[in-house]
Image (cartoon, rainbow, N blue to C red; front, side, top):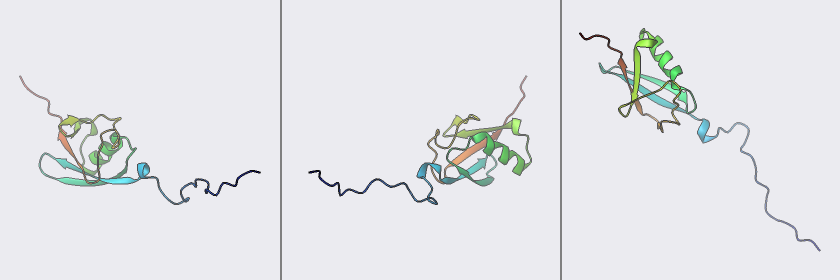
Amino acid sequence: MSEENNEAPPTAPPAGEVKPEQQSMNIKVTSTDGNEVFFKIKRTTRLNKLKNAYAERVGKNVAAIRFFYDGNRVNDDDTPDSLDLEEGDSIEVALEQVGGC
């Protein structure tokens, strides 16, 4: 005779539940003059979208903006997950300066 398996089959999360890796997070963008702008983005959003949104909000040319996190330059294809950003982390922004002799 066969034995019955009393274990319940694994179930999928409810349809409305969001997986933790897809949740959005709040990021603060801080300029060198101390201004702070807050954004809510998904953990998988490429940060070039954040840079574009920041440039539009502050009225600057996106080509002149540079993002930094922990002293390292942020690339356009980086995501919060790839940089291990956490809720409430801050990205520093600087305007590109051209000049010299």
